Image 1: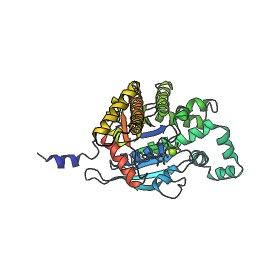
Image 2: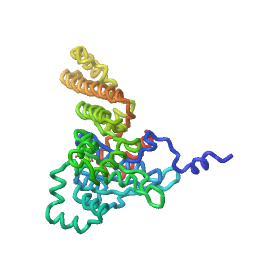
Image 3: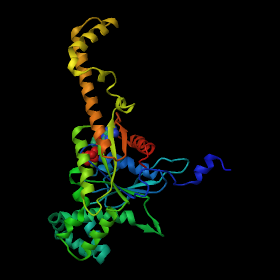
Image 4: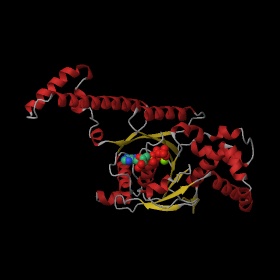
Length: 354
Ligand SMILES: Nc1ncnc2c1ncn2[C@@H]1O[C@H](COP(=O)(O)OP(=O)(O)OP(=O)(O)O)[C@@H](O)[C@H]1O
Ligand SMILES: [Mg+2]
């Protein structure tokens, strides 16, 4: 009988995760909650399975280049990092790509019509800008189309990328961005763009695609997350699969047992006067003098903390009701560098996200 260690080495990528079978991971969330950071960490986490992963952004912000501290990304897949080894298996490469609708349109013309020169001429004439500005649905189908193409791309019968992660537009725009088929139908009823849109939709609406939400444990981003999940389910024809909810920037106290309430929670706001008195006595007993002002300040602070903790518990309950897996990521105090991304990637793996 083989030893357990040898046995696990033989199972190259047999590892239970919440998203087995998903090949296109779309990461959305309220602006500023950490979409780009979490998308980068998720790409690293997925690449730890040993296969290359493509991380792409679609909003022309060069957020990925900033996160990995590399020069601005061209319209070209570039290696930006290597995932940490896992179970003695080397980690896969993470490639990154910044997609813009203009380049995607030129590439599309070239692929379907062998029209690269024409594409260049059209660019010079401003037609490409014109087409992608005048028809936002066209831009979206080109951007999501690139994601679908990379997801399906094969070489020698094997998928080129183990997974594709998209740093996507924020929650407010996500279902419209992904539900391009209805947008484009007004634009092109038949023809190659229509066919292209249908192919893209068949990827996005399949179990191969999941849309993850990044949030903070605060009212607004949580509400946007819940609305976003509901919208995806409502998209029609079976909807688009919502993925996990990543609760980002959790403080230590919140993570360790999520008991930020702890002692503070016990101080009820309604009985502040009594508690202040109790605090005064406690401070005195601890040899900290009998300073009623200090006791009052402390009581205020504890009451604040209790209020935050209560509100966070309420937000957490709401998220739980959405019925999607939740992952907690710590607030990294020294800012986000590659080591921090590795830490976040590890946390995602430990919780079963990748
Ligand atoms: N877990 C974390 N710990 C510490 N800092 C974080 C964490 N996650 C994100 N940040 C920081 O928060 C800021 C916003 O993160 P990020 O750029 O990933 O958000 P975003 O949702 O992509 O923003 P935008 O909507 O502008 O695209 C950045 O400065 C990032 O370094
Ligand atoms: Mg971003």
